[in-house]
Length: 147
Figure 1 (cartoon, rainbow, N blue to C red):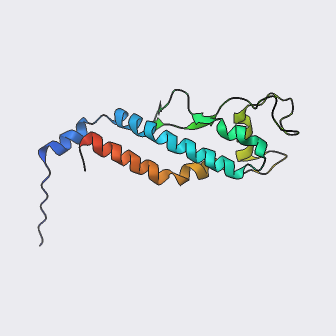
Figure 2 (cartoon, rainbow, N blue to C red):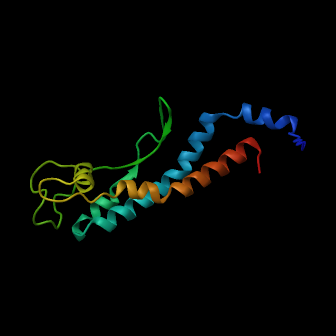
Figure 3 (tube, one colour):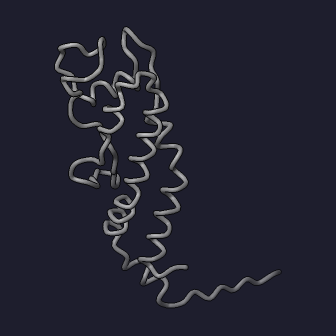
């Protein structure tokens, strides 16, 4: 029968167990939110055919308050803030209704009675998944002294 021996340095486990998960999660997500913001803007731009909607693309910003702790972990994200300018170039669409850029993003993502859905959020998140995992791994390795 073959024998396998693996020597683990004594300080490896203590480094791992002494690591502060909250600190690692916050740092990793703080560093990843610009990746998500860029990806969401690019994805939204790709589904918007009306050139006057560039204001919507520019309205995507990181969540106010940054990383949020939830029951099962930590979250970060981007959202569209503000309202379309009153003096915009649009000749139709939102009209005089009091809508926000977030409303417009929702309609774009899910559609409404006047337009088919043009999903862009899932695509944006999936396109950077590997980059986020890599960045998170780098930060984790740095914090626990792994290589």
